[in-house]
Length: 444
Image (cartoon, rainbow, N blue to C red):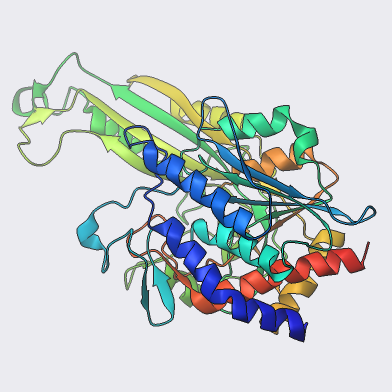
């Protein structure tokens, strides 16, 4: 342990340089952005892994950016570990919202700032650092896949995995796209909520009508839609749609003050729902109106609104069937529509949740590795966010333990301005990744 920790410590300037190299590339795979930086990031990832001792190559994925693939064979009886991260990133958004340029990695107070520092180019750096710790010869068979379209939610790479299960077969899958609940606090994510989206359109009139001449008799579509949306939750704020799955949570609890601070809840505003905060966040459904198409206040006229649209995003219990939940929400909206208004519901994106390795040899080895790297026992948390690839891997590799962890933390501000990673946790995560391989090798 002492030798490996010292090796990783000496490697950290190289690990950081690998991360900074990737952060400088605006590898945004969304439509409308130039494809060249995505290709550049893929090539840079090949170079980083090759320098770490892995014979990396581009893996062409039809209809999607290339993935990066490498395999290092270990001793004949050693277990196989599949390591995953992604090199694509979210758009930076308004550059004025950043305290330093988003694609110029900048250190402040022990954190490295820049788009992708936490989500998920640090995952690539952690994997390369773990390989470097063994001089490119880890004590187990290692497969590495670095994806190029995770942020877009396109699903093309997931289909590729499902169609080529033998390529990705492993005893343990390590997904370096998670993080710690707080800096220095080792954390395994053991559940993921699912997702479904519904667009609802309410129509009442053929066109706008003067509110003075027809108001009080002709129904307003925005008011009707608002009444419908209000029925999605009860007085406590719990989801009121019948039939949606719920489950209990036995991992680390969530503290009220921590949630309020990390969620930037305004003073005096109550948290919603009943039961433990962890269950509300990890194992129960939530419904959010993430967008509406209605007249804006600028230039508003005294007219009854004839048409209003809302997009609803529901997070679902890990075991929920997202298509079934989507239909339950649609049925609810149709049932509560007032005044005979016309309602059109269109199902959108879905993603299944997952229950990941909470026990088993892979999870046990991960806990031992984190305890040694961080100097304290790991805790289990859930995630309200969906990682669809984890679900695909769980389906095609039913006997594999899936370990979800990473160098991210509650201050990382992923997908927002001033994204960052704590450099101390980057080192600890790299050490944990390396120690996991020794733990798996010794327990084989």
